[in-house]
Image 1: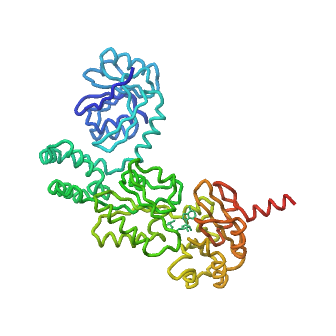
Image 2: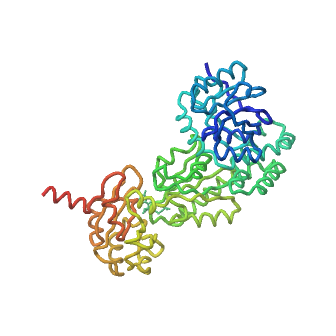
Image 3: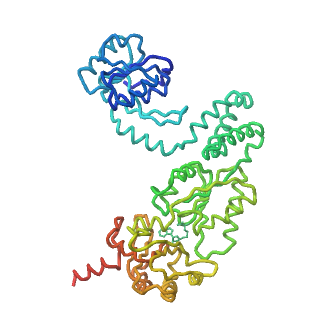
Length: 476
Ligand code: SAH
């Protein structure tokens, strides 16, 4: 026997809540949104319930429960901690054919209150039939994270234009496609940015120009983070879920790509480091090609798209070609590697600032030399340095960093195979060679790097640093 799901219209209908404590208050708060006429029965009620009664939102009946209070009531909630009383309320409600919910008591209830994802007027109710309410809450969390806040306003907007849409597009299949475009396209995008007026205008425009059904391709420039899919933002996850085509870098992890729709087209446009301009131009051409076909393109980059990711160049190209885009930031390698290695990038005692650098620029490693690198209280986070570790060490030493400055090389940060190599600047290339460090790896230089020895928490303990020395000493 299963439950019958309903959404009840309680507007102007009398409902009774018995119990004036925190639970009763929560039930009243939820019922208030329905427009029901609420009576709260309890000799004493919480401060909020008192205030709501005073403001006229609810009626407080300052008495013990009595059967006669159920006269003309549509629905009753028993929210007292007195089981005998709850039983009496339930029995009387059954006798009068009134729906009753006894909080946390499936056996006494004739209806249950589901876990709710509220994007009013859109609502998603979840029930396990009372079997495992905690489970329903977990499922609710998952759905919450998939549906962004623009869905409520979008549903409202569609409701407002429903008749116009129906008249303009009588064919059901075409209308379904139109709704799909509303759901995934620029109208939803504008609502997400809080631009209700422009969204309405875009909807009217789309209704007017039905023939350019295909014209609305777009590109989302999305940061995929360092590898752990848990580090994606909710916006990144949604973009990936909605994409028709994903053009991704080599650095984007398989775990992240696995989140794409099954029918989405995945294109690896990964470049080896040092690749030339033609491959960047090829990426531009692919972006243009797919977006012009009206597809939702996700340009998925490791870490953050605006940090050493050439995201800026791609946006300039899209702007020049009149293609709509948005940008979803990602957790950059420096933030992720630092966090997963237990290295606070700033620290009151050790580092007052942090700098993101790349060893790989148009000028090569010499670009590093032009910067002020001597400040011992500044942490350096150096990207793309694996092939240039001797040069980096020499430059840093030549520009005033001490040979004893701690470093940490974090390889495959945030991924199951993460390794941390720890040492002092002087030994950097040798230790990296000993441990055969491969790309991708991020180099952190500065006093804070040494904290990894104590604060590391993820994966293997740091190699090559004090731990190894301690181990060697123990072994000796
Ligand atoms: N846009 C990216 C950086 C691209 S440059 C971001 O914001 O993270 C590529 C460099 O990033 C690599 O050479 C390496 O230094 C670093 N990197 C990216 N992912 C990494 C990871 N999971 N672990 C360590 N370093 C990483």
